[in-house]
Image (cartoon, rainbow, N blue to C red; front, top):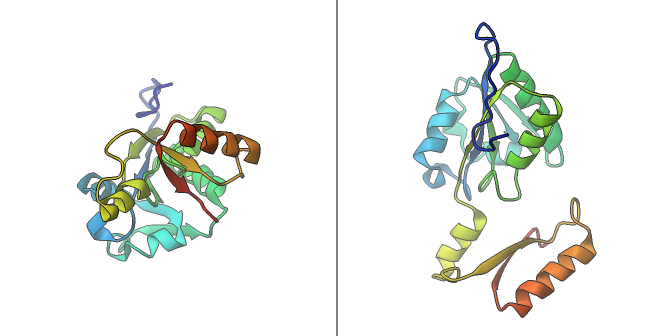
Length: 179
């Protein structure tokens, strides 16, 4: 399966929509890429975590908006696929970049499980590591490692080993999910 553009050859009479997984960057319209803005403007339905949607109200006007709270990522992804399979153009909004500790991987996993015919596009956003690094100067100009401290999907002993390995290798280490 191609990960960037999830298309399958189907009966030409079938019409399927698209899920654009859109990264909104660190927040606010001035941090969205032009491609991300276009994907949201083109979509008929916007789905996302309410906090992220609150940062882009200007782009939601006249759209069907489905928002939910944290920890409902699977439900949001499933709903986006269902609507796209019914022919709708969906923007699934994520903070940061959808491929970095966000929704893109989950959408592809769920699409594969259900053999979804929906077109899936990943629209990159400015990741937290980029925006934070810019505030500090240029700490990531050489090799670095990004490690999530969340143990929801990765066991804590493995996270500890990754931190130790990155520290031993003298990498700048970007930590996600410190809570």
